[in-house]
Amino acid sequence: MQHKTLIELINSEPSHHEITVRGWVRSFRSNRFIALNDGSTIKTLQCVVDFENFEEEILKKITIGAAVQITGILVESQGQGQTVELQVSKVKVLGEADPEEVKLTILSPKRHTLEKLREQAHLRVRTNTFGAVMRTRSKLAFAIHEYFHKNGFFYMHAPIITGSDAEGAGEMFHVTALDAKNPPLTKDGKIDYKEDFFEKETNLTVSGQLEAETYAMALGKVYTFGPTFRAENSNTSRHLAEFWMIEPEVAFNDLDANMDLAEDFIKYVIKYALDNCADDLEFLENRLLEEEKSKPQDERSAMKLREKLQFVLENNFKRVSYTEAIDILKNSNPNKKKKFKYIIEEWGADLQSEHERFLVEKHFKCPVILFDYPAKIKAFYMRLNDDGKTVRAMDVLFPGIGEIVGGSQREERYDVLKEKMEAMDISAEELYWYLDLRKFGTATHSGFGLGFERLVQFATGMGNIRDVIPYPRTPGNAEF
Ligand code: 4AD
Ligand code: MG
Image (cartoon, rainbow, N blue to C red):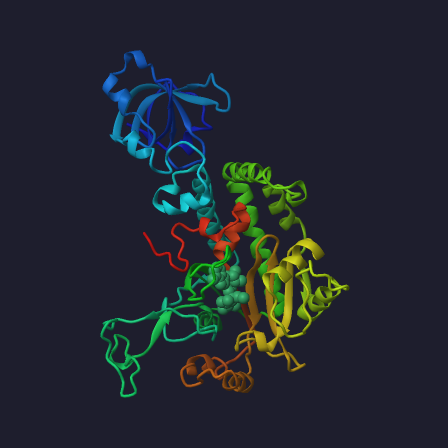
């Protein structure tokens, strides 16, 4: 017997051979029309049951959420919106779903809020919205690997458990095999990590960058793509405690080449989504249009989802220095009217997301790459400019998202790096291996990190980052 997935069937020609499909019942109308979905596509296959010739017992078990195996012949559809349908000869119920219990879940056929769906994260992927988002997420991940492999990069697996804090920001989850309730203590009452599995204090990685740099200085072009962890207590629609990051690192690239790479890479994966996720993006676009209807006219988006994606492909990202951006922000509010939140008085201040969004959405109206930030607000490893106060940092800012990429040209000069580490209280002893790169054949090199979930958010139009990752980890949320 030939089993087919729906994606293979939906656009195929009618055929006189019997075929068998398997999936879950989305609806069963008039004891006659089963809408079957198997997850391979957002579309359902209409399966037409000749109910008079079916056992009552079986018909009763064809309920929403049940897993079924259906055999029949693919014929031209009489209905609208589909080319083929299955004329059913046999239904086997593989797994029942009690309608009374289904009613209590998000599988029940009515509109549920995204918050409600989040509470049942194990079931939400069976809804059209989450099926579309998660298929798109998977395709984007594939496109990322494809891009780098086409461009001569090697995939490097950075460690998840590490002894270093790559960002020097202290936002780490500690990893220990010690008895949490009764840990061994040093003489001065601190946890004695010498007694631990690794015989030192370790944490979950906040970024694979430093390790990726060591590989770039040997293999030339590398990228990591893995989970990263931040113990920052941010309850926003853009932050997760566990997120996936893509970090390319390239020997001999300066900041300009780094910007070129970021722009080319992002455009490639967005184009891939447009070309390969058409049905899902169409569904998500319509979902957004529906959502927009409840907003006042002037707050509605001028562009549809796929137009926004297309717009990114067709326009150059605007490259602007931090200093220019501060001038724009200062001048955006000449009268200091209260209703403008965008005002920044001080050169040197870190940009808040409202500033970033003002620049992207109101001022330039396109993706922006900000570069040459004040050294004081950026990490220790970024290359110091000749002015002595800015570093070769870059952030890519996207409409609706804010920062999607953070990167830099790295400080390749041993003495300058060492001095900076001392000034920022970063142990040269612990990071001796990182300093070694600057001793043995040092070279200009650059890289960046792209937050995968922020990319998925942009591509799918989902407003909350919790809705683009299967099981979001946020403060207070580690169920499942
Ligand atoms: O700007 P970040 O902190 O940069 C780094 O980690 C560098 N080591 C990257 C590099 O140069 N190799 O993070 C990079 C990106 C951000 O621009 C954002 O898209 C994402 O990672 N990101 C988060 N995404 C979700 N939740 C969080 N808590 C995130 N923190 C950063
Ligand atoms: Mg950043």
